[in-house]
Image 1 (cartoon, rainbow, N blue to C red):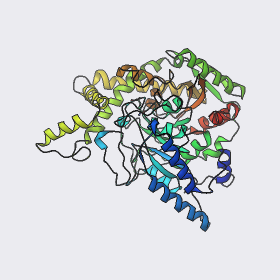
Image 2: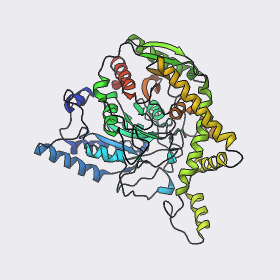
Image 3: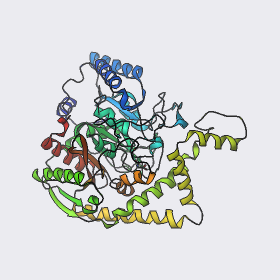
Image 4: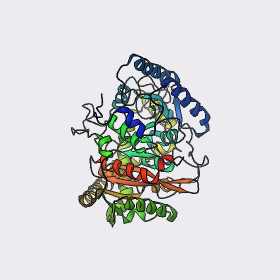
Length: 482
Ligand code: GLN
């Protein structure tokens, strides 16, 4: 059980999170959520809706309330889960034809944790196939649509989770972030999305894309719900040896602390190649932070521009190895007649989408003898440089700021070349290379389209990011914008 601390009981947390109705009737809340999902079906946020499971859980919570039993800290909250996080008995597809009918026999650690805290899992959300993409357009189940403009992309790869939150179908959602997949759709749908420090949250049961970069994280409409979900999922897990044995702070208490004197370095290079309107909105948000007592200064990170090529080399190299298991025998596809090699080729050709295959090819290439030194090893050196630059700046600043995305959400199908889409990750990938935590918070709208501000913190200092986000939320009122 998660201990939030006596000073901060569940009810007061939820009150602060603007939740007046909890935990009155969780079953009714589930029916309302199902209605919302139905109403927003055209947004294509969900791959699988588990109405039966959700109602069963809600009834269990109701019984606990009647009997006066202790409730978990997420009791009654409706949760959506990205479809690359394993859920026992509930289809987990990675939005790929390869896993179209895959039903895991075990829960990811984060799922065990949220279940123990009485969250109600309502379904699995749409994503780019195997989390490879920035717009949820590579999903086998078709793109998720942006909440604010249905002709535009939701961002990605956790597009379904972000839209499920934005359309109020769920209170909280889990996403995963390898190079921006939580922050990007959070920005494109005006919600909060946090990518925790590498090693803060267990990856056990997360279907791997690039294991040295992947992290699971929380998404919600406001800072406190995001914080609450982080509180539940954070911590060491013996089943994931990359999680660290570091105590998990009481994030809720941390978030409510005074924020005076926080120093924020604005990364100059983060504003290059950015739509001017987007930059202006982000500067406006920084003005608000200054107004509430943060010290804002410009800083430089010359190596940032090399993050994108380094990221794509490393991510593709790791994915080519991680996806080798999908051979139609151990996982994926349907058995076909003939020799094993023929079956392997047939199934991988048919069941992987174009983008996934492109990355497996490129990843295999950059790791191959004769090329490894030129690509993979060089990319790893750049990764170290980026890490060192961040660490140097974070000695003098509590957080660093950039726009989350360089542009506004684009029209579905508008960006045709893979390179054009890779370029959309220029602000987010450096963070994953360095293993740092980062948050995207709503910075306002241009017309009807939202902009996100990205704040990057030092390793294991999620609390500072959430504290800034909470103070900014109170000043800007972003939790009431829609
Ligand atoms: N857009 C990036 C990629 O395609 C990041 C995806 C992610 O974070 N899962 O690799």
